[in-house]
Amino acid sequence: MVKRQAYEPILITDAPRSQDDQLTSRQKQYLVMMLFRVACVVIGAVLVMVGVPLLWLWLSLCAVGMVLLPWLAVLIANDRPPKEEHRLVNRFRARQREETPQPVITAAEHPHKIIDAED
Image (tube, rainbow, N blue to C red; front, side):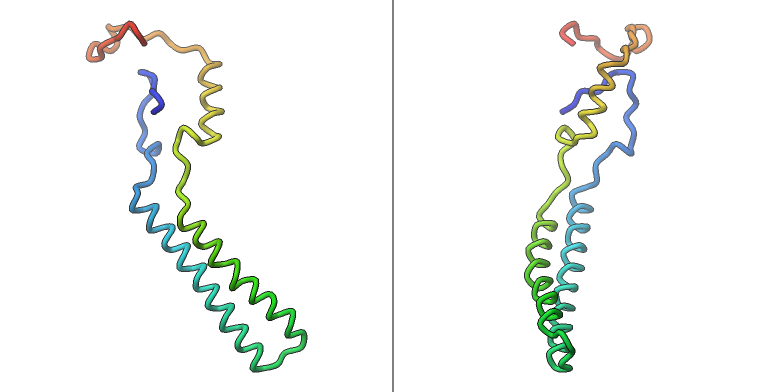
């Protein structure tokens, strides 16, 4: 876990999304992708019944959608956002923090905090 400096406020916008929110979002994405797959199956069946020109092209496009969408949907549904310490943005922020001088905070400014000599 990344240690916060004493002078940095903790913002609610820094809080990650809850596990339930992430799961609900991934379930919705999975459902939408599966609906597109069903649409590809229905469109393919309609194209065969109607007998449109270049049927082989349209059926191959529908087949690609029917094959790739379930695979992509499962990958997206099982994917979770990266943990904060592994995000690339946080690595750049860490470099910026190292380059900026750290203000010295005395015990008088924060009497409720116990200052540890090992930090």
